[in-house]
Amino acid sequence: MKVRVKWTKTGVLKFIGHLDVQRYFQKALMRAELPVSFSKGMSPHQIMSFAAPLGLGMTSEGEYADISFDWTYSSEEMLSRINAVMNEGISVLEFKEIDENAEYNQLKVIHAMQKNKVSADCFQSSSGYGYDDFGRDTLEKVYADTFHTEACLVRPQITCGTHALAIALFGNLRPGDELLAPAGKPYDTLEEVIGIRPSKGSLAEYGVSYRQVELLEDGTFDYDSIRKAINEKTRLVEIQRSKGYQTRPSFSVKQIGELISFVKSIKPDVICMVDNCYGEFVDTIEPSDVGADMIVGSLIKNPGGGLAPIGGYIAGTKECVENASYRMTCPGLGSEVGATLGVNRSFFQGFFLAPMVTKGALKGAVFAANIYEKLGFPVIPDSTEPRQDIIQAVSLGTPEGLIAFCKGIQAAAPVDSYVDPEPWDMPGYDSQVIMAAGAFVQGSSIELSADGPMKPPYAVYFQGGLTWEHAKLGVLMSLQKMVDKGLVTL
Image (tube, rainbow, N blue to C red; front, side, top):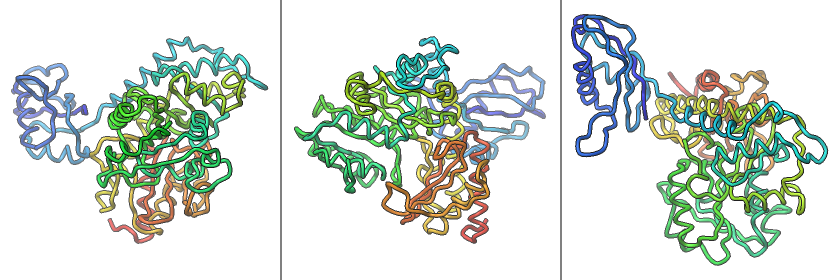
């Protein structure tokens, strides 16, 4: 992780030369016991680069260096540690993580748009059957190139993430097949799709069986049990990248790739599908880069950039996407139909902005982890752990804490800030759920939002924020509501 450091050089240290300053920083980082990264090879050295040298005898209130760390503490902790070992004359003012992932992903999206010659004509819409919708077809090529897949569906007819997953599952499973979930129980709303909880029209009613393998106690995959679970009927393996309403860590793309490789080594023809909700653009690679046959998500989460008013996507191999298209519409029509009804511009612009919007949401999640772990609440992930999605889980321990947190998020919203969220029996869930989201798009969880089931450990799942500044306000308002209720003492 690369961090940009701003520092001052004053007093008698103005007579220290540029190379001596570099050596001074190398020793200071070691004394501060900061996890600085080293180069590989026979003669490892600290990875850092300094801006243009300051002339000997000159002072400055704003010098810069880029330093790589294996991981980081909070900015406040980093500042405290480094300045505690600095001599008078050099003082570090700022530690700022450079948003390399966001920059890389932004360029990836731009490249895909340029490659596919996106033009103003792409923003026109279709009605009726939606035949020959140039903008829709171009957008799907942009998604496919960005996610490095053979094909993609990006449609407003897909109402939400659960709908997109259901289309992908029903399109690629047949009676007698078996669905395997190697990461334990899937997200609540998929339980009725699969038939874990009986529901009309579920996969179970169509003769598709289901098997799941629980995670190990440390939250990693149980490879021995997965090996035993794969059999001649196993047709599709569904991997949920994000934690859902669980307090396990979310999976990295690397972990998912290792699992896919393991599954394919046992049964090469099995379809590996990844529920990619909340994970797009968090890393520089996606599960489709590590062997996933399909990745599925919602446009009112990361890839919609806060502008898509509805929609979902299914990206993957040509065969898997084509199969899904026949379930999305009907056999014989598939992806050839589906009017866009005026959303093309929002879909394109939202996807263009998505890497930057995701970056702001990630900063908000880290800020929330910092605040609440210092108050003694269990948080997953903690403030120093790498991020695999935009969700921050905080176990609040009581229903009052969960409700107060959500009321704070609602109070920070630009829309419906005067409304008090209350727990309710939301369709698709096995317990009451409280949701806070004063969003421009109903249910959008790339916008500032928080929700959680009303059951132990009363964990809240905080995500989103179209800007980092708004995410920060939401966290502070949640804290204020906790203080007002006497649940937290500052």
